[in-house]
Length: 260
Image 1 (cartoon, helix red, strand yellow):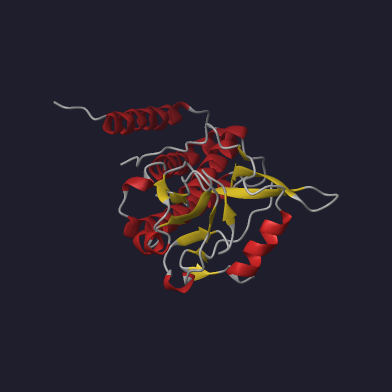
Image 2 (tube, rainbow, N blue to C red; image 1 turned 120 degrees about the vertical axis):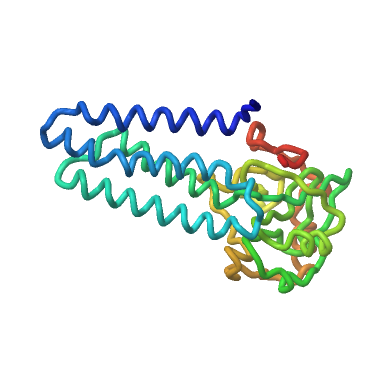
């Protein structure tokens, strides 16, 4: 018999859940024991959803949005059950951690299947003026046309979107598969407004993030300048034609090949 690692993992979890359910029978017959017994089903469901969300990128792209929505509903439904069960007393730390793990994994799953397009040329490159209105699916972030891009910088990323159309608009770029979305932060010297260098950071940092153009198919962002005006503004402000780039995503899973 062939044992797949994923099957063994699920089998191990199932064994742990069965043991947990069995052990709940021996809990004291008092109010706290009854709360824990009533919490068994929500606990198991939250753990199962958390684990399943970690494999969301294995689903076909067209199935992921519905899976995320179902996962969100299950999480909030069973968190609500726990809150009712423990009403009047503080939720135990173990359950608080379980709830936060489930919600954090759901937030991370918003980017399951993410593909990034990156400029790998040897010299700076300028994002061309493109018609982004042809992109209508999924979640999409894209540098403003006219942005001067340094070698190695991510220009766009999308989740569940029309990747082929995006690539046809930006054929000079190459695919990249990071763990999560990344953003370029252009660093400006305060006293004279000179652009000195760039920083690449995960989108989910303490730094402000720009709006994506599309979020789950809904257009929420827009370009604010025409491409040529924006290019000229940057060129005038840059300390030199090619500025240094600091990559603060090392160890953030910036893989150069598809995980599939």
